[in-house]
Length: 212
Image (cartoon, rainbow, N blue to C red; front, side, top):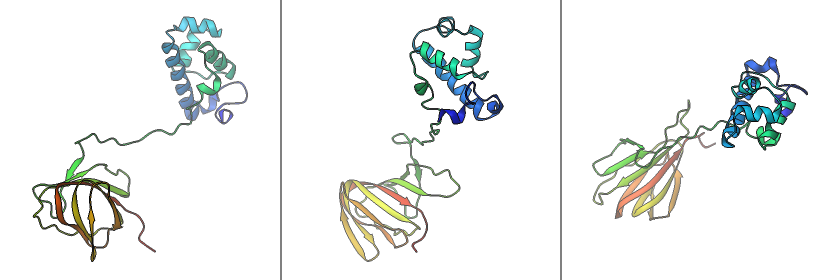
Protein backbone atom coordinates (compact mmCIF):
# COMPACT_ATOMS: atom_id res chain seq x y z
CA UNK A 1 0.00 0.00 0.00
CA UNK A 2 2.88 2.38 0.83
CA UNK A 3 4.59 1.80 -2.54
CA UNK A 4 1.53 3.03 -4.42
CA UNK A 5 2.03 6.42 -2.82
CA UNK A 6 5.83 6.65 -2.90
CA UNK A 7 8.27 6.82 -5.81
CA UNK A 8 10.39 3.63 -5.90
CA UNK A 9 12.49 3.27 -3.97
CA UNK A 10 14.03 6.47 -2.74
CA UNK A 11 11.71 9.43 -2.32
CA UNK A 12 8.19 10.70 -2.14
CA UNK A 13 7.19 11.40 -5.75
CA UNK A 14 7.99 15.05 -6.37
CA UNK A 15 5.86 15.12 -9.56
CA UNK A 16 2.82 14.25 -7.45
CA UNK A 17 3.59 17.00 -4.95
CA UNK A 18 0.83 19.12 -6.40
CA UNK A 19 -1.79 16.46 -5.59
CA UNK A 20 -1.70 13.29 -3.51
CA UNK A 21 2.05 13.64 -2.92
CA UNK A 22 1.62 17.04 -1.26
CA UNK A 23 -1.27 15.79 0.88
CA UNK A 24 0.80 12.80 2.03
CA UNK A 25 3.82 15.00 2.77
CA UNK A 26 1.64 17.24 4.94
CA UNK A 27 0.10 14.26 6.69
CA UNK A 28 3.50 12.67 7.45
CA UNK A 29 4.92 15.99 8.59
CA UNK A 30 2.01 16.57 10.95
CA UNK A 31 2.33 13.02 12.33
CA UNK A 32 6.07 13.45 12.95
CA UNK A 33 5.56 16.80 14.64
CA UNK A 34 2.75 15.44 16.82
CA UNK A 35 4.83 12.46 17.93
CA UNK A 36 7.88 14.66 18.59
CA UNK A 37 5.88 17.02 20.78
CA UNK A 38 4.22 14.10 22.56
CA UNK A 39 7.70 12.87 23.55
CA UNK A 40 8.73 16.38 24.64
CA UNK A 41 11.57 16.50 22.10
CA UNK A 42 12.91 19.52 20.25
CA UNK A 43 13.65 19.71 16.54
CA UNK A 44 17.36 19.84 17.40
CA UNK A 45 17.13 16.63 19.47
CA UNK A 46 15.23 14.65 16.84
CA UNK A 47 17.37 15.89 13.95
CA UNK A 48 20.47 14.76 15.85
CA UNK A 49 18.99 11.32 16.56
CA UNK A 50 17.92 10.90 12.93
CA UNK A 51 21.10 12.33 11.44
CA UNK A 52 19.48 15.11 9.40
CA UNK A 53 19.65 18.89 9.60
CA UNK A 54 17.26 20.91 11.72
CA UNK A 55 16.23 22.90 8.65
CA UNK A 56 15.34 19.72 6.78
CA UNK A 57 13.30 18.36 9.70
CA UNK A 58 11.43 21.66 9.97
CA UNK A 59 10.55 21.52 6.26
CA UNK A 60 9.43 17.90 6.58
CA UNK A 61 7.21 18.67 9.56
CA UNK A 62 5.61 21.53 7.62
CA UNK A 63 5.04 19.40 4.51
CA UNK A 64 7.31 21.63 2.45
CA UNK A 65 9.55 19.00 0.87
CA UNK A 66 9.65 15.42 -0.36
CA UNK A 67 11.84 13.04 1.54
CA UNK A 68 13.29 9.55 1.12
CA UNK A 69 12.02 6.38 2.74
CA UNK A 70 15.39 6.08 4.45
CA UNK A 71 14.95 9.50 6.08
CA UNK A 72 11.39 8.68 7.11
CA UNK A 73 12.62 5.40 8.59
CA UNK A 74 15.32 7.20 10.61
CA UNK A 75 12.85 9.81 11.85
CA UNK A 76 10.33 7.14 12.82
CA UNK A 77 13.02 5.17 14.66
CA UNK A 78 14.15 8.32 16.49
CA UNK A 79 10.56 8.73 17.71
CA UNK A 80 10.11 5.07 18.64
CA UNK A 81 7.80 4.33 15.68
CA UNK A 82 7.74 1.82 12.87
CA UNK A 83 7.20 2.93 9.27
CA UNK A 84 3.92 1.00 9.18
CA UNK A 85 2.69 2.93 12.23
CA UNK A 86 3.68 6.22 10.58
CA UNK A 87 1.71 5.40 7.42
CA UNK A 88 -1.19 3.70 9.22
CA UNK A 89 -3.87 6.35 8.57
CA UNK A 90 -2.61 7.76 5.26
CA UNK A 91 -5.56 6.33 3.31
CA UNK A 92 -8.12 6.72 6.08
CA UNK A 93 -11.43 7.99 4.67
CA UNK A 94 -12.31 11.45 5.93
CA UNK A 95 -15.11 11.42 8.49
CA UNK A 96 -18.28 13.36 7.80
CA UNK A 97 -20.67 12.46 10.59
CA UNK A 98 -23.50 14.77 11.65
CA UNK A 99 -23.95 15.28 15.39
CA UNK A 100 -27.19 16.67 16.82
CA UNK A 101 -26.96 17.32 20.55
CA UNK A 102 -29.75 16.43 22.94
CA UNK A 103 -32.63 18.87 22.55
CA UNK A 104 -31.13 20.51 19.46
CA UNK A 105 -33.02 18.67 16.72
CA UNK A 106 -34.89 21.01 14.40
CA UNK A 107 -38.57 21.25 15.38
CA UNK A 108 -40.77 20.82 12.33
CA UNK A 109 -44.48 21.29 11.68
CA UNK A 110 -46.33 18.45 10.02
CA UNK A 111 -49.93 18.34 8.90
CA UNK A 112 -52.13 18.03 11.97
CA UNK A 113 -49.47 19.26 14.37
CA UNK A 114 -51.09 20.89 17.41
CA UNK A 115 -50.14 22.14 20.83
CA UNK A 116 -48.54 19.28 22.73
CA UNK A 117 -47.40 17.54 19.52
CA UNK A 118 -43.66 17.85 18.92
CA UNK A 119 -41.88 16.54 15.82
CA UNK A 120 -38.13 16.99 16.18
CA UNK A 121 -35.97 16.18 13.14
CA UNK A 122 -32.77 14.46 14.33
CA UNK A 123 -30.71 14.59 11.12
CA UNK A 124 -30.65 16.79 8.04
CA UNK A 125 -29.92 14.98 4.78
CA UNK A 126 -27.55 17.21 2.80
CA UNK A 127 -27.27 15.14 -0.37
CA UNK A 128 -29.03 15.79 -3.71
CA UNK A 129 -31.64 13.14 -2.86
CA UNK A 130 -33.44 12.68 0.46
CA UNK A 131 -32.62 9.19 1.75
CA UNK A 132 -34.17 9.16 5.21
CA UNK A 133 -35.77 11.31 7.93
CA UNK A 134 -35.50 10.43 11.64
CA UNK A 135 -38.00 12.14 13.97
CA UNK A 136 -38.36 12.17 17.74
CA UNK A 137 -42.12 12.56 18.27
CA UNK A 138 -43.85 13.55 21.49
CA UNK A 139 -47.66 13.40 21.91
CA UNK A 140 -49.35 14.21 25.19
CA UNK A 141 -53.07 14.74 24.55
CA UNK A 142 -54.91 11.44 24.96
CA UNK A 143 -58.24 12.91 23.76
CA UNK A 144 -56.83 14.27 20.49
CA UNK A 145 -58.10 13.17 17.07
CA UNK A 146 -55.00 12.51 15.00
CA UNK A 147 -54.59 12.95 11.24
CA UNK A 148 -53.40 10.13 9.00
CA UNK A 149 -50.24 10.34 6.92
CA UNK A 150 -49.04 8.95 3.60
CA UNK A 151 -45.58 9.26 2.10
CA UNK A 152 -43.11 7.33 -0.05
CA UNK A 153 -40.76 4.73 1.43
CA UNK A 154 -40.80 2.63 4.59
CA UNK A 155 -41.35 3.88 8.13
CA UNK A 156 -40.07 2.38 11.37
CA UNK A 157 -41.48 3.36 14.76
CA UNK A 158 -39.67 2.55 18.02
CA UNK A 159 -41.59 3.28 21.21
CA UNK A 160 -39.65 4.95 24.02
CA UNK A 161 -42.39 5.98 26.48
CA UNK A 162 -46.15 5.61 26.89
CA UNK A 163 -48.55 3.36 25.01
CA UNK A 164 -50.69 3.93 21.93
CA UNK A 165 -52.85 2.28 19.33
CA UNK A 166 -51.36 2.86 15.89
CA UNK A 167 -53.33 2.40 12.68
CA UNK A 168 -51.86 1.20 9.38
CA UNK A 169 -54.46 0.74 6.69
CA UNK A 170 -57.31 -1.32 8.15
CA UNK A 171 -55.15 -2.82 10.93
CA UNK A 172 -54.41 -1.41 14.40
CA UNK A 173 -51.48 -2.24 16.67
CA UNK A 174 -51.07 -1.74 20.42
CA UNK A 175 -47.48 -0.68 21.06
CA UNK A 176 -45.52 0.26 24.18
CA UNK A 177 -41.93 0.90 25.31
CA UNK A 178 -39.43 -1.24 23.42
CA UNK A 179 -41.89 -2.21 20.65
CA UNK A 180 -41.02 -1.67 16.99
CA UNK A 181 -43.52 -1.24 14.17
CA UNK A 182 -42.40 -1.17 10.52
CA UNK A 183 -44.70 -0.48 7.56
CA UNK A 184 -45.10 0.92 4.06
CA UNK A 185 -45.47 4.69 4.12
CA UNK A 186 -47.82 4.89 1.13
CA UNK A 187 -50.61 3.17 3.14
CA UNK A 188 -52.57 5.64 5.36
CA UNK A 189 -51.24 5.50 8.91
CA UNK A 190 -51.02 7.38 12.18
CA UNK A 191 -51.71 7.29 15.94
CA UNK A 192 -55.31 6.47 16.83
CA UNK A 193 -55.51 6.30 20.64
CA UNK A 194 -52.99 7.29 23.32
CA UNK A 195 -53.63 4.95 26.24
CA UNK A 196 -50.70 6.10 28.38
CA UNK A 197 -49.25 9.60 28.06
CA UNK A 198 -46.92 11.31 27.50
CA UNK A 199 -46.05 9.25 24.44
CA UNK A 200 -42.55 9.44 23.02
CA UNK A 201 -41.25 7.50 20.04
CA UNK A 202 -38.72 7.49 17.22
CA UNK A 203 -40.10 7.48 13.68
CA UNK A 204 -37.59 6.85 10.90
CA UNK A 205 -38.75 7.24 7.30
CA UNK A 206 -36.48 5.51 4.80
CA UNK A 207 -36.93 6.66 1.21
CA UNK A 208 -35.85 4.52 -1.72
CA UNK A 209 -36.96 2.92 -4.92
CA UNK A 210 -40.60 1.97 -5.17
CA UNK A 211 -41.60 -1.64 -4.84
CA UNK A 212 -41.09 -3.70 -8.02
